[in-house]
Every structure is written in structure tokens, then in C-alpha cells.
Image (cartoon, rainbow, N blue to C red):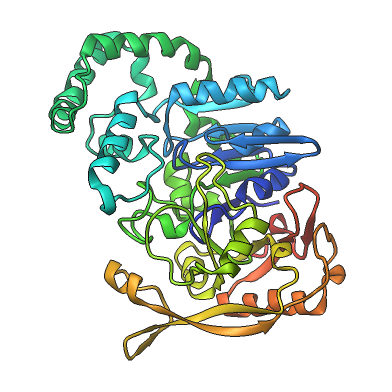
Length: 431
């Protein structure tokens, strides 16, 4: 079996957690390669519901789970998450969890800055989760971040803290935030260091050893392509690269390691937070999709905006990330609609576009061009065979497949782990 990279192909919340958990059953290693605790994954196993923000979903299966160097990690949030899932019966030990020693920390000052900036921006806010992820990435690329490997080097840590605070002190004063002292931050880090130390390793070395041994690796993306800092609806994006190409950089493996790229796509479209959304429905249909789909953020509880399926958006994601197959999730939410709509293009003034333009003004100005498809009255919730889907539902899947330029490998019909229709096995190759 080959390696598989799983990414969201819309604006996130596509159901990656369930899919990764299902795939992890046949993988040997699961790796998170970007983002932070601003992305939530929910996994339902029987009567147990697990909610992850930092832990790779493979921990449910007891598989070797790696938090790669591309992730910015809030150590206090990580430790809290570990304790929470341990209380649910999961075993989280250094044999199961590896944290990259060269990953950067998310500090309390990052959270302060994130929240204060959003409050100051008012109507111009980006819609962050307030978890400090953006400011942490800023420090990383600014070469002033604290990395986990620094925690064990007390002599050097002091100088690194001074460099960090030299940048943050004027920002905090300008935003009316209280001063952070070097001694206070050093004490805080000294308290958390021994708690995370058992999990620290050169993650790239662990991963490459597994690859050399022929073990099957599942690369787990957070957020989604349209939230990518380069390719998304900038500036209403996350602060990292979310596309499949980031799997290699953020995990410490060569680009060939990414293997088969599997995009997760919801059968309709949702977005949480601010930013352009061409297919958004603010009417009773949008409300119906939200209620039936339980569209509230795993991490934040924020209500998601809902709309019809946007094939233009997904087709763009397929091209940017080299997606070979997709998992179409939440098909059952569309049960009972007389007519369904799919966006096949955008109208911008007197032009028709087959892509989402980069300009924020144009993104906000495009109007969707819809194709209507017949709906179905039958109940698809829990269906596990392709033959069990109504003909209209099968036609809907096939039409999406044709419009996005990638095959549908899997269809999910409920949040339950086993409610999956397997059309083609992503691990079987198909390269």
C-alpha cells in the first residue's frame, strides 16, 4: 500500500477527522503537518465522541502519531487535550505520540495579540479563532520563535526570549496589553517543559525511518485549500500553507512521500468566519442545510455559513493540490430536496470565469452560475453500498465527479465511522 495525504478541498469542516480515522485503521503512521489548535476534528466511535485540535487522529487507533515541525503548538492546549482523551480511555504515551523538537510554540502572548488585533479591527476583522496561531507563525518566519528544542537549553533560552519580547513589547503597548517580562515567561516555560519533554524527538528522523521500513503513512491536513495563505481567499485565510505540497515540508519528508492525494469535499459548501463565499445561502435553504448538517465548529462552536456545492472552487483545489480522488461527505444532508444546485462558473460583470480570482474585490463580486439537478426523497442516512443510493443521488455524485475533474473514491452518509460507501480504495494506489 502507498502513502496517502488527506486535505480539505473547500474552506474546512469537510469531515476530515472521520475520514482520517477510517483510513488510519490501515495506516501505520499518522502525521499532522501544519496548522495549530485552530482546527478541530471530530471522530465518532460507537457511543464515544473524540474532539481533537492538535493530536493526530491516529491516536484513536493507537497508531504512531506525529505532530510535525510545520505545526505551531500550544503546549498547554496539547497537554489539556491529552488529559481529556486519556479520561475517555485513550492511551497517549511517547510510544504513540511524537512531537517534533523543531516545532514552534504558541505562547499566551500570541493569544493576547490575536484577540486584541481582532477587537481593534472591528468590522474589518479576519475572523480568527483567537488561539494565537497567526502571531505564532509570524514569529516563526520572523526567526524569533521559541522552539521546543529551546526549552532544554536554559542558557540560550534567555537570549531568545529577549529577542522575542523586543518585538512584542511595542505591539502590546500599542494595543493596551499588559507587559510580559522575560523572567515571567521563562518561569512559565520552565513549568511546562518537563511535561512535554517525553514526547519530543526529531520527528523527521522517526518519519523517514518508518518510510524506509516500508510502513504506510497517512498525512493529515488541517483547515483546507481555500484557507491556504497563498492560494486561499486572502486575507481571510489561515497563516500556513494547507495544500498537499506542505505535507513534505511540514513533516520533514521528501515530496514523493506524500503519495496519493485525497481531497475531502462536503456535498454542499460551508464556511466559518469572515470572507467571500460566492454560493452562500442566507435564506431558509441555507438554514436547513446548517440545521441538518449540524454546522457548528468543533473547536469554537461558531455557526457555519452554508450554500450549494461550488464545483469551481473544488476544481481549483484539485489542480492546486494534485488531488487524485475525493471523499464526498454528508450526502445524507441533501435528502428530501426537490431540486439541488451546483455552481459551474462565476459571472463577473460581463465576463464568465471558470476559476475563483485572486482579487478580494473580485472574489466578493462574482455571482454563481448554477446548474440544477433533481433531488431525491429517499433516506440515504447510514447507507453503506453504492447500490443502496437512490438513482438521483448516484447521478449527483457522478455529476460532481465530472465537474471537478477528480474521481469520487468514497461517499459518507453519517458521522458514524462505518457509514461509508467505498467506491475505490485510496490505499490501493491509482497513481
